[in-house]
Amino acid sequence: MRGYFITFEGGEGAGKTSALAGVADQLIKRGYPVMVTREPGGIKISEKIRDILLDNSNIEMDARTEALLYAAARRQHLVEKVKPALDAGKIVLCDRFIDSSLAYQGYARDLGIENIYQVNQFAIEQFMPDLTLFFDIEPKKGLARIQANQTREQNRLDVEDLSFHQTVYEGYQILKKRFPVRIETIDAEKSLADVIETAYQKILLHINE
Ligand code: TYD
Image 1: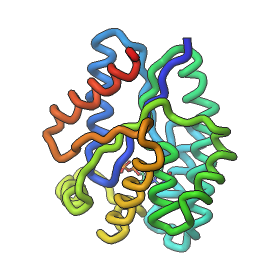
Image 2: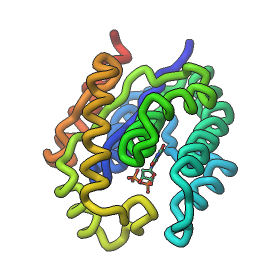
Image 3: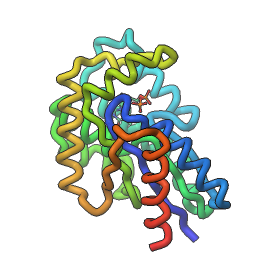
Image 4: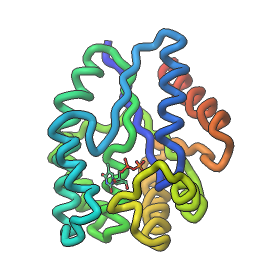
């Protein structure tokens, strides 16, 4: 049996990483085989690429270099970790995937959603998620959440200004229209417990379809 590939998407401070951990707990409690991972990163080579991408001192990084590095990290992570887990029948919960590149590099960095889609097709060879949950929060509120969280380090993309994050949000709205079946929206302004429950129910519905 092939597993399910479920990705979690959204802007900064949407709470998707906490939601992912909560959903994983619920699924594991009910006996589902789950693997949790994240992008960029998840395995040694991709974590090294992540360090380069998120290093605040890399201010000279060109936008296309950034896009290619995200795609390279994605490729390695997919073949080394995600696909083997799916082949073993696991439910793979992945914090960010191609939609992040489409929204951040394609739309917000203005490289073009279509260009970034093509670059990523080279990396993933049409391997798209079965389901994507978009955690919807007004960018201003999301940024306020991460600024209030003293334990969270601000990376090279977090420190972009509000208008950048608003553009990322618009990018996601375009993606929701382009992939209306795959991408489901979750109101991330609700309490974490509500968000986890909604995400969990959507996943159950999907895997029991
Ligand atoms: P991370 O600390 O994991 O942020 P978050 O908790 O918001 O997911 O950092 C990942 C950053 O990389 C985040 O700012 C979004 C950005 N990103 C892209 O710009 N393109 C991509 O393809 C991916 C996967 C992430």
